[in-house]
Length: 235
DNA sequence: ATTATGATCGTCT
DNA sequence: GACGATCATAATG
Image 1 (cartoon, protein in one colour):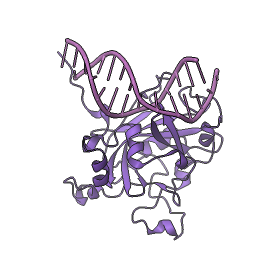
Image 2: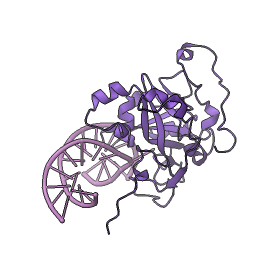
Image 3: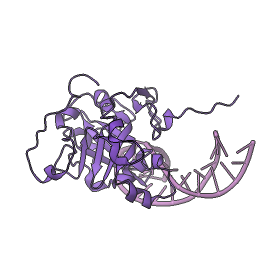
Image 4: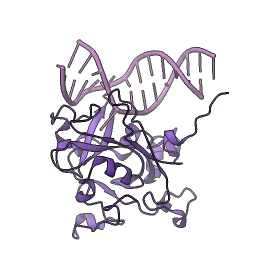
């Protein structure tokens, strides 16, 4: 894993309502209070939970602050982007193309304005209910793409600015054993976090500015990551 | 297989 | 008033 903070974090939370949830402790705010380019790859393999649904993150993008023309924070703390300049470890939710609610996690110290966009993942809890809602989608496609990921998790505007470090409706934590997916993999095959997985990086997608920055990160070999699928090249 | 287009609305100019 | 950090569907090779 990366340097320093990626080990098992010390849970800052005492017992409370959130303690009833079984699983690893959430990442503390200090995990997100680092350069966004350090946090982004460290989030690969982590889990986002909202109610009964949990997604294991397989693809992310880093967005900078005033220095990143592709970032919503580029124009400063406008009403929409103000959350990005707030404390790290909180959700930044925005409406994409008038249709899709997409989820970011704010990073860095207050005033920096950086965040990680969660672009794709694998549904590892609540999958039956999710599948029932979108029966035409293959399991690997349920949370593929930021719009679908947000949709599966039930991300809505009111979640913006809520902490993901515990005590809020959204929680990000180190990935538990993936065995609960029930897709043939037993707990013995489960991979905690991104351990054993290769991480690749490349340009961000869907943007028109700063396209040269390789600020997109993904787990190699994950079906939910479109870039991981070898493109059939014509001869 | 790839390409084109409509949906739909908050945000910023 | 224009433009998206996108997706689903339809048309076409």
